[in-house]
Image (cartoon, rainbow, N blue to C red; front, side, top):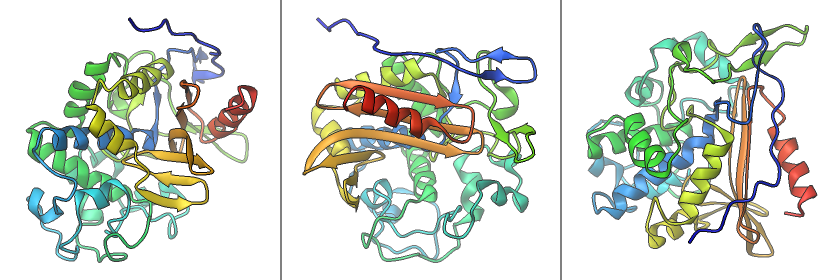
Length: 316
């Protein structure tokens, strides 16, 4: 019998729709940007668990798309851990603002992973596979294309069926920005002069394997419970997903689609985060206490500060 869940803290602030003063609630759906890279990793691990792929499968062996300049030894493991060295469609070292990308590309035409290919498919490698950790959105796009080829479903349909539906995330999905369902927050970009705009022209029109799903805070807690209770993957593959495969910096490692916080070699936090114009998200599982945290926002910043305050309040 599962123990009854105890909610220690929940609250909601601000407007889901500023123009009409529709308030946010605990159950409002928010975009989570890169917070859903973990869903992509779970999807890949499910296919590996079924024997369809392996983590050592090379990219050229599992995807019927030509990448003329990619190294032949790029594997699924490299893509999952951001160590592939493939070029990215958004290089944070070159472009300071995600919105700059859409000055030369039409965001409303980016409905699926294949639509992103012209942005990086013919570019050269950044470094040799496995050489280092370098956060990479294009690698997740490629993983999504692998899911599509080997499942026969669109990436978003696969996740909605095999992750969201499977663990009871009934309010979550990949929604078109110009067709948001009820009880969904608009994302807002605040300007220096005090004005604001929605983020509909700041993001791809539909999310995918690298980010852009919508969920509620309670749904994200439901996801953590399903993942940690081995309801989405077997114990073996859950442990592989949560293993600190790559050292990122002091106190931080990376698993498959998940950040891992460490203190004196002990794992103290598994977490995901997302940053986009008008989107800010942090969510975590703390293994020592079993506590779970989800902070959603339709502004561009603030979730990290809330997370730190909660961690201090509960000594996490």
